[in-house]
Image 1 (spheres, rainbow, N blue to C red):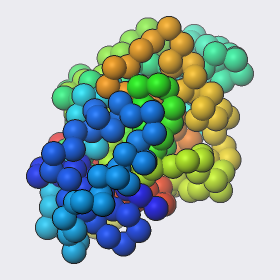
Image 2 (cartoon, rainbow, N blue to C red):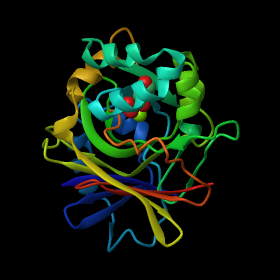
Image 3 (spheres, rainbow, N blue to C red):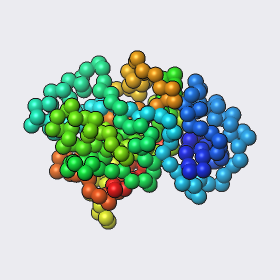
Image 4 (cartoon, rainbow, N blue to C red):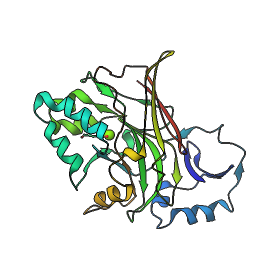
Length: 276
Ligand code: DO4
Ligand code: MG
């Protein structure tokens, strides 16, 4: 398995158990390849080996990529959003987009709004009902091909979205609203549908939330979502596409400052962030 990390000292590629130091590799050049894997295989033949990556600070695996997101791709998200939008009369739109051929796609973050493993995510000061959304996130090259996957957290303000679906950009896009990492796992095929996505939220020594889903619950395929995103849209540096959440805590739950959010998708790894 090949994994691509970005660290404060540059890129590191893990090929099975060996790490290779590629300080001059820009991620935009990986996303610009028709076939990123052969390019990386070639680069590691002359790269110095590292015994471990543990001395490095791993950061979000992007440089110039936009992050987009798909929504209401799991029944659980449809249900939770219908409940939160009901008082404002907006629930019908969620039911319709879950069934529709055209998926919901929205712009989630530009690179400066994205944090990596161990960094802080934020909740908006003008919001009182917030959740993390643990999402399989696709790495897509400039040609629109999904070449890898990472773990993503689509932080969301449920009260703002619930008040009016037209407020979605404010519920979703703000400073430190998105976390990605710890690496891009290069994939030739989609992950098996049995792949588990788990979310644990620690509050002090307690677990405040613990839940899991599998990719079998995702209503759309990665290629289908990428195909819609690339319709009439070009990405000169490639992009990321979050595939939606299948885990939404019950309506009484909201994040608090200091909560530690841990999202795990094996075989990619775990993404942990603290709420600032
Ligand atoms: O419809 C609003 C956003 C949905 C979303 O982010 C999700 O389902 O993951
Ligand atoms: Mg989401």
